[in-house]
Structure formats: structure tokens, C-alpha cells
Length: 593
Image (cartoon, rainbow, N blue to C red):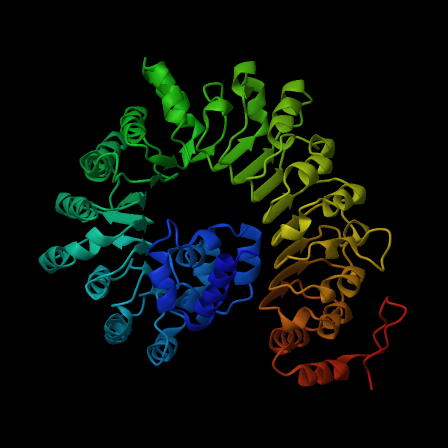
């Protein structure tokens, strides 16, 4: 290995221990083109494997190393581990505990339902406001409290509001908005869930609120809710005048080099065709990606406007698409990251819709099999989505749902999923009536060790054999070595204690949801005898029929707390056993004394 490269690796290891760079490395990095070149060469799988083992304190230290490691930690999957949740059920006790903490956490989710916590909330702002970067607030009941808290957060980057109640807004709140103008100007990401309006002045206040957020990189538009009923035409005018116009004006004023990168629409507030077309033209001109675009938007734009040549340009800026129609070309969706497809839409598609269906930035695929018709066009659409190698996709959801009859399980082939989706992190399968052999093909895929979240819901023909395989000494599902969250729901109780004894108790899961009528108390209690209890953080299961609600409650509590006192949990369980628990492994001994 090159001596310079080796020295950089040694110096980087010292960064990870201390959380700061060394002086020698800072001097060397001045001459280098990219001081973080070594870190950028690491594969994502390597960094993910390393960061999965870091506790929150280590993540905070790693975040201080350089811009590259800060970007690693700021990914949602790791940033959520640094988030402190303070909601109404936690009350003052949790707030006081956080205020006594010696660490400077930078991410919080706070619920402000209790008015008697206002003093604690202001103390919280004084204590953490100077370092607060991410804040998620429920402000539906106290908008004034939110303004006071934001005034203590000068370096806030991300703000998420569940809702803003602007009814009976006073002059004091309007004056406070001017005080936090610089805080709003520093925001990079903002999400607003719900806005409650009633009068013209209150709507003008919200327009001023958006105008102050002049440096946003990502904005989620709110659901505009009116206290009194208004005609649809008036609602659309208000939405355009007080919400979309300030957003479009901000995009135009900032220009191409400082543009807003992502604009997330609201599904419950469908935009009228003319307003959507104006917004899409501005976004295309300044390269702003639109999310939560419904296929009906494209259809209505074509019907009401003669500018059909602009449709292809609009498709190039779509980031999240819900549905397909004849006006949407897969080859034009060059920036789409999430797509939801109903296979019944294939009946309206033509050959030109399938040209060059690479979707180079696609991350999430939701496929809804919602028709019982046997048509070659449906098979072609499914083959286009699942039969193409997609190394960028990390989340796949397949849902069978039809009220008209039984849908053939052969429409979706397990072999296509195993071969073409080798980099999945999340796999959801709903009501897939394939037999055990198809599921075994899934567990033999080259990338199954990367799956971290698996959900198998109401798969009628799935049994223990589909999870364990033919050789029960080597259960097939254990090939998912990276699995952290598992959700299994069996409709007819085809999942039994055998799956728990042979597989689940040997898996280091963080979350488990298991619903099956055939699972017994002894089966769930066997989780105390493997490595399962050493990592589990959340467990939820249907109550077995052979125990009382109280017994099951204490068992679930013991499973969560067993890693702290395993001997006590096992002894309490042994008193409940009516007979020794028999394991399926021939070489295992009973743990009873």
C-alpha cells in the first residue's frame, strides 16, 4: 500500500476516536485537491456496516470530522437515531431529563400540547437552541409557543411543523414574525403538514411566513384547511395567491444557481390544471424537482392546454409519480425517485410509453396488482418494471388487491425480484398467494443479505416451509443476515412455533411484529433462549390462545428487558412452563435446571 495513503488512514482513525482532525492532517490537506478523497472511495455498504455499530454519542463525534462524515450521519436512517422525541405523553419528566443531559443533541421532535410546559420549553430553547439543527414540532394548539422557541434557534437547518393554527391571530404574533425573520432565512428544509385559515389577514400572515424562507432547498406544501366552507374555485384562488405565488416568486428571484431543489406537493390539495402547469414551467426553468405528482395532473394539463410539447419537459422534473397514463413516457422520467404503478393502467398504455424504461435515479417502486384481467399488456408492464435490472432501487413494495376476484400469483415472479433487485433495503409483500417454493427463491437471491426491513402480510400460501426451507438445520431466512425489522402476518395460522424455534430466536432483530393463531406461549417464550433478546427493541404479537393477557404482557416485557437481566426473565418464565420446552435442534440441551 502507498505510504501516503496508509498515513491518511491512520490519521482518519484518530479522527474517529477524538471527533476532531489532527493539526498535521489539516496542513497536508491544504495541498490536496480533495482532503476527503479516501472517504469518498469507500463503498456505501462498507460505511453502512460501520455506522450501524455506532451509538448516538459516536455518531455525534463522527459528524464533527469533516463534510463527508457529516453527510453520512445526516442521512435519515442515522439522523433519526440522534433525535429525541418529546411529546405530550412524555410530559415534564422527559423534558427535565433532557435538560439535565450533558450532550448537545441537535435533533428533536417536540409536541407542544401541554400549555403548562411553556416554561420548560423556553428553558429547552435556551439550553439547546444555539446548536439545534433539526426540529419537528406539533404546533396545532400553540403557534405563539412555536415562535418563541424559534427565536432561540439561530442556526436551525430543518423545520417540520405538523400544523399551524392561524385562527384569531393577534398582532403580537405578527410582530414576532419580524423577530425570527433571520431564523426563517437560514432554513434549508421545511415541511408543513396542515394550515388552518379563517380570515384574509391570517392568510397574508402565512404568505409573509413563506416569503421570509428565502433560502430553502426543500419545501413541503401544506394542506390548506378552512374553518368555514368555501367553494372550490375560491379555495383554488386562495391556494394560488397565498401559497404557490410566493413559492414561485422565490424560485424566480433566486435564479438557477441558488434554486430550490425539491418541492413536495400535497395529495389532499390537488392543484387545478392551470396552476399546476404554471408551477411546473417555473420548476423546469430552474431545475426544481416536483414530488407527489399524480398522473391526473398530466392528464388534465393535456386536456385543458394546447402546449402538449411541454409535457415531456414536465416529466423530466418529476421526482415522485403516482400512477401512469398514456401521456407519461417512462423514458422521460430521468429524475423520478419513487414511482407507484397500478397494473390496470397498462390497458391504456401504448408502445411509445415503454421506450427506454431505465429510470436511472429510481429508489422506490410500489407495484399494485389490482386487476384480474389476463392481458398481454399487463404482463408487459410488470415485465418492464420487474424484469429490468435496477441496481438503484432500495425499496420494493408489491401489493395484490382486487375486489373483483382472485388474481394469479404468477404475474409476479420471485426470480425477477431476486436477480434484478440486488440492492434492496426494504421489501414489502402484501397478499401474494405464491407457494413456499417462490419464497425460497427470494431468500436465495444475491442481495438478500442487504435487506433490513421485511414485511410479509396476509400471504395465504406461505407456511413455515417457505421461511425455513427443506433443510431445517439451515433455515433459508437466516440468509437475511442484515435484517433488522420483520413483520409477518399469517391469515390462517400457517406460521407456527417452528419458525420461532428454528429461525427467529437466532436473528438479531430490532423490531418484530408477528401475528398468527398457531403461535403458542411456549413458542414466543423460546425467544429468551437465543440471541434474539440481546438486540430486540420493539416487539408486538397477537396474544396466544393458551395464556392470559397478564401472562402475555409480562412475557413481552421480559423480552424487551432480558438483555439487562436475562437470568431473572428466564426464571420467571420457567415458573410458567407446564412442561419442558423441546427444541428442534438434535444437539441442543434443555436450559431448565
